Image 1 (cartoon, rainbow, N blue to C red):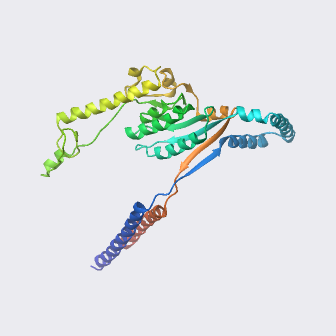
Image 2: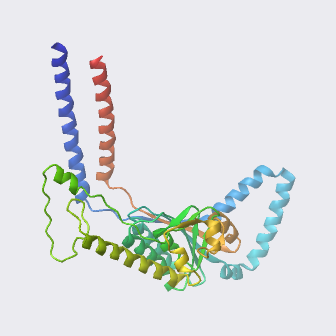
Image 3: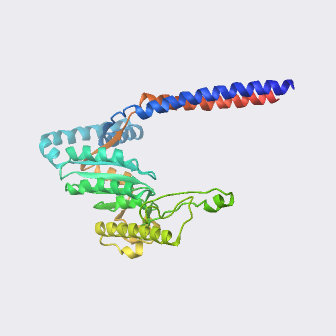
Length: 342
């Protein structure tokens, strides 16, 4: 009996503490939803300087003093010649702006992409180039459709657009990539998957088995085609399939518009291919990693990486701290409960 009393007292304290923490977290979440989201920051980083620094660091380690001294002398002579033709050099060396897009299922990263593209278009000339490193297995149609439209803005301004795929650009990711003037791919990057998929579970039989009624009221024959809890009909399924087929048709037309050299019926089966096979099918133009492309471009272009990021609000920071505190508290309560039980 004494053990049960102590355990009950411990459990009551634990529940009280957890409820108190949950209330604090709830208040912080409420503050987060009401607090005005801060504007983000654009960052321009010179990749040319980065590559030059790497080269200098490697040379200082690998070369002996005499060879290094000779190299430095040669570099000074080159710089002296360049300084005489500085105006010509500056006029000839154009900019290459680099953007990374690592897309998730809901494509929320498009909010950052639109800011990055806007910043580039504010300063880029028609002699410049934009390289977008795309990494995505796809996601929602409207999200990736908007992402592709952001890349189209570059082409509409008459600026060369290159897309590099080091790992994967499938489905919505390929929708973005196909907009480019040129698509680069690593040999084993995943490319393609020009198809559409939609799926959802249906719990209607479970509800019926447990005598639970589900009501859903709509205005319009196809306001809802398939539902998770209602009884689906053949007419609803047919309409749902028709909608998917229509999206697939638009996807195919979009890809064909940007890459007319494709045999669209052959590649728009929902399959994906690795880079080597994708090149044979004209899904990509060249087998090359983004690193190799940038190192080659560094000789003739000035490279800049553009990124946009938002700072976390105070409420968001507090929310994360509260989450960590709750996690730690649960671990302590678990340990304390084990000690009491022993």
